[in-house]
Image 1 (cartoon, rainbow, N blue to C red):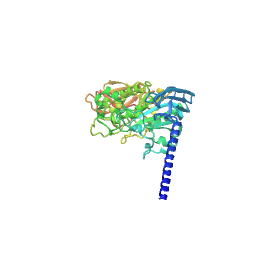
Image 2: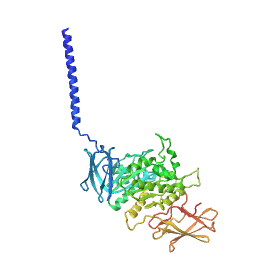
Image 3: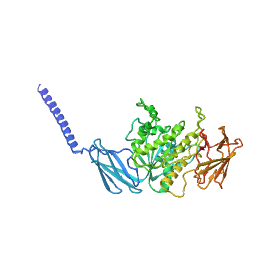
Length: 492
């Protein structure tokens, strides 16, 4: 009996000691918690990060989240100045900081009591590269049975002055404040996964300007332009165009109107950029009658919402490709190319690159992305940065005159004369009032700087077309090697 009583006493003491230990742990933890400052680390959208490039010589906005009503201090190493603001009741804050001329690397320190440091920041030129698959087409996708040298491209790509940011695919039926992606230095890995057109653009810019270059790639293959325009803009164009958004919940296609603007453009609105590059239109091929209006609308909306003025907008006209369209065999892709050309005459501070000589008959993704990126860079270097002595615009029809059975065409942007580089002008067609087109004999008269066109099949010509088919290989250039776009003088 006595032994049982002694064992019960021992068990109770162990239980009491165990309870005391837990009490000590809880009190110690509470004490430590009281010693830790009640600060949440400042958070930033993905577009701001180490390795980024900020636009030079601007008042650059930087924003993020912090504790509500807290003081946020940002210090920039390029001028060692501190900038201060107070977050709102939701914790949102924004600071504008003046950037110097090109240089770096620098650092940015941002604190809400706990410091966040962005390192290896450069100051230079920032461009957005957007559109569908031909802008998205990666450098590593250029390797094929038709093209050698992919390793050489990648091994020579390392350049600490060129930085890349790829926005990950995401779609949303309402505007988002952030997306996924990160800034990276150029090397074989980062370049292989980046837009080929964008990379070649940035490479030539850096080689010419000798300043840091930041490229932001935001693309999604197979998408219509409607997906890249905000809802208010599309409503002003045609409210019925938003019907494809109704009653959609978790599953909806990437072509849904506004869904890519919401998820892949809206989060970076206000991020200071120099300009935008665009390569899109294949998915709107059957809508040439409205495509130029949609391009004009998209740029008006982007410029308004970005809030940094009428930034440069340079884009690629679609390269020729045989669509084999059995549904609408008479609607060849020259009509969408024409719409793109018409848009270039309506959008201020813009330029269109012709790729009429780089298409591939059986591949909608031509491998020659060097010309796409390089010709875009010609526009930026000439018209944005004022580089003298170069040419960026190709021949454009100026006037057509008819004398009996002969048509005379003159051009602007011939820059010293036209050339076919020895191929012969094989893409011109001529038609009479019956609207039947026949291959034309074409001769360039250098003294008149004019093309003389005729056909024995057409005694009284009224219209001319050049390259106005799905697939052609352009043969009309100025002396600087810039090709003319396909065109027509009729409206049939």
